[in-house]
Image (cartoon, rainbow, N blue to C red):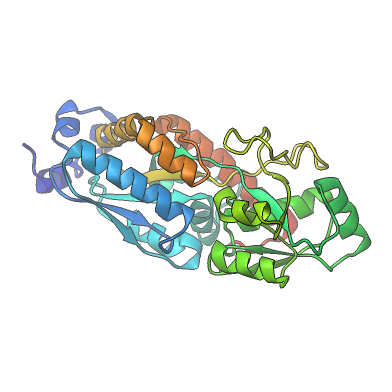
Length: 329
């Protein structure tokens, strides 16, 4: 069996070795504990999905997979730590839209030239759930069309909260304002929870939030649902219409979560982890646990995930430039 030190030594070979599949590597890996870095605090959606992935891989590999929380700067700190880690497969990253976008923005990347593979090795998408747009009941609107009309007749009066600068909740609100041509005040928080609390208290007007965070408040009449951010109704929340269908055509914003390794991690290891994650995410227990977090499993191949990330981050970098949005705290 190849040791972890052996794998590290193997990574020193020329680029051809990393590009050519080595079945022996894949069979030997992992030969020890694996760290799964989560670049956000415990309790959020990234934490929930990270625990599912860690549990699944630990059960399959019969090796310890330890979630490690490295929050800070909208995911930038933890993500950078993984980027600087040895590319041996023993440090993985469960990142979200905002974390990768923060890295791109901090590095001065341009939309037309951004390539995630310069710093990370994409492994697989885990989930890409739509958000729900909710407003405080004091805001006299019931759908996206009414919200846009109200914002236009009351410029500067509406504010939207987010879980931090550059996060998917921030980007969703900025995209909405840009496409609708309205003025909205962005109020960043240290997580979705505090933002929901202030929305309930009327300190902010609206919020793009994960479904599971606001569903109970909608049911209790404490918040009013405006629409979801996907192009189609969510299979988990079929009674909620989309924003695109109720006032803002072509609007879409997904808060995706995916698994990465440091750049130059051997292709055989990346392929093995991707295949194992994909297989375990489709198990009934995983589907149930993700559904409780308002998400559906969406695993794909490293090549598919790479293309997905590059396209999505380029979209947000372009929006940030056109709308003068600050992405890095």
